[in-house]
Amino acid sequence: MPAAALPELVTLAIDAALAAGREILDVYAGPIAVERKQDASPLTEADRRAHRAIAAALAAAGLPLLSEEGRALPAAERRRWERYWLVDPLDGTKEFVRRNGEFTVNIALMERVAEPEAADGVAVPVAGVLYAPVRDLLYFSWRGGGAFRQDGAGAPGVAAAARAAAARRLPCASARAAYTIVASRSHSSPETEAFIREAEREHGRVELASLGSALKICLVAEGAADVYPRFAPTMEWDTAAGHAIALEAGRDLVDPASGAALRYNKLDLVNPWFLVR
Image 1 (cartoon, rainbow, N blue to C red):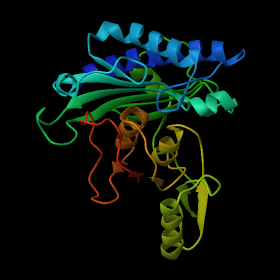
Image 2 (tube, rainbow, N blue to C red; image 1 turned 90 degrees about the vertical axis):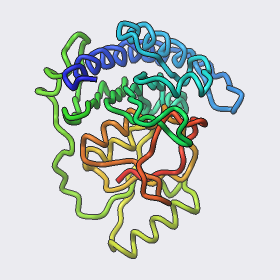
Image 3 (tube, helix red, strand yellow; image 1 turned 135 degrees about the vertical axis):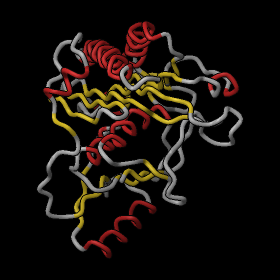
């Protein structure tokens, strides 16, 4: 894909995310009915409406769409895609139900970098859009173009390059006095606790930061935190948009065991544990 094409695709993805955000906020304003999927995770009408809005907006690009709320696709089919959209229409449904505002729309543009028969992931994110509707907060990036934070995304129809010129480039300057880990002591795991203890031994003073959904990745990307250890299951659509933003901010999502960067479009769409650093 020519690099010049990426900003136009990011513009399309931003407009899709804003359209999804409007649908989400419309549901958010009223009573929220919660269903349960087969894996017991929550599902709301906002998830469905956001998916439909994104699918309609992205159709103009003519690329395949892999969405949490879309139909399941055979691995043999999707792993042959050269480029595709990877979407979580509403990341942080639990935060949505709790009405804490810490949920996002995640849209990533993916590109195949390995043969479809490769044993593990065959794709990487080359552009990402992450939008928090309640905050009207937008993060976006494209390969070679940088990563940006726009406080007050406003209306659709603005070119990504114009948004970038008016936004803050990541990472932002930080005045942190302590090594900062994205984690929560109240909702932690033994692995996370061990990671924190090791960081305390290495860095001395350690502070914790926490946010819902993929906003946690953005804390590291923008420089508000040093590392985000994730020792719990996630899906590919949970991380791809944030990963794209982190990459352009000089960060990465890596497997803590091997140090290798996460790959996507695996046979199984469940991510391994990872670190954002």
